[in-house]
Length: 64
Image (cartoon, rainbow, N blue to C red):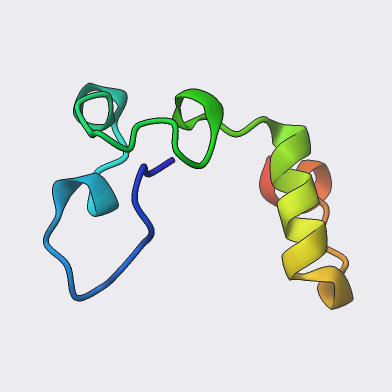
């Protein structure tokens, strides 16, 4: 995950490069998720909140 909110107008590497070797140097590392990591269950909760009407299941529709 990224330590900064995505923005297409920015060239900030912490927005576009999500590699841990890069992200760990950001002052905002871990701001949104612990260690910039999101569990599958947490990602499913995000999907449920953001795309409830689409009935997307991480384990069925994305993971495979």
